[in-house]
Image (cartoon, rainbow, N blue to C red; front, side, top):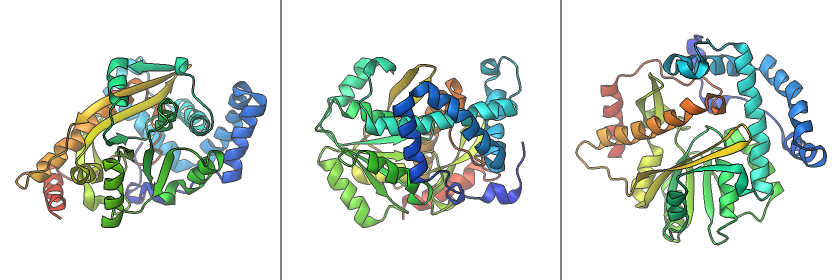
Length: 331
C-alpha cells in the first residue's frame, strides 16, 4: 500500500498516456457496430493488459480503495479491498472512456439519468449569466454534453492539460468538430488567457475546470486539505480564477451507477472573494469545501475515482499550507 518517495513525488502529468487516437476511435467503432455488450466483453482483455503492465496505477488504485474502505467500511461490508477490486476499478475506467466518447458523439437519453434535485438543475440551466463549473476526475463530466443539446445557445469551454490528454482531446474533436464544447489546452493560466476567459464568461458562456489535481506548475499553488481522512494537495487555481472572473461558481458531478447516470449540481459560491487579510485561509476554506463535496460523491461510488497515481500528500502542515496560499493570494 505504501509507495516509494520517487513515486510520491511523480506528477500525474508525467504518466504515459494510454491509448492512441486510432485506438480510441476503434473502441467507438466497435461499440457502434457490435453494441455495448460486445464492447464490455472485449474490454476485459484490454483492461487486463492495462492491469498487468501498469504497476503504478495498480498501487494507486489499491491505496485509494483501501483508504476509502477505512473511512467508509459499510460500503465494503467489512471487506478489505484487494486486487480483484483494483481490476473492477480499472474496468470501470475503461467503460468511462467509451461513455466520454458517446457523450461527444451521440445525443444522450434523459431517461438514462438519475438527476439529484431536478428543480435546482432546471433553475441553473435557465441562467443567462456565465458560470464557472468545477468538476473532477470522479466519473464522467462529459455527460454535461447531453444537457447542452437541450440548450443550443449554450457554449461550454473546458480547460485541460494537453500533456496528459492530447490524444483523447484530438479524438473527441474528430468525432464532433461542430460541437459547442470548446477545449483549451493550457499549461498555466496566464493573463491573456484569463482575459479571454473573462470575455467568454461576460458573454454568458460556461467554463469547466477540474479541481482535483495538482497543477503543472507544481505544489507551490496548492493547499493541503482533508480528503478521506488523509492530507491531500489540491490546486488553488480554480478559486483564483473565479475571483478574477467575478461569476457564480458551481460544482458538477456525473458518474455511472449500474445502468443509470448519476448527475448532481452542487452550488458552491455566488462569487469567490479573497480579502487581503486572511486571503490564504479563505483559499484553504474554498479548497476544503470542494474536497468535502468530492468526498461525498466518492463515498457513494469509489470505483468511479479515476486518478490512477499516488494521490495523498506525504507531508505539509495546515499552517504551512495556509501560509503558502496566503502568498499566492497576493501574487
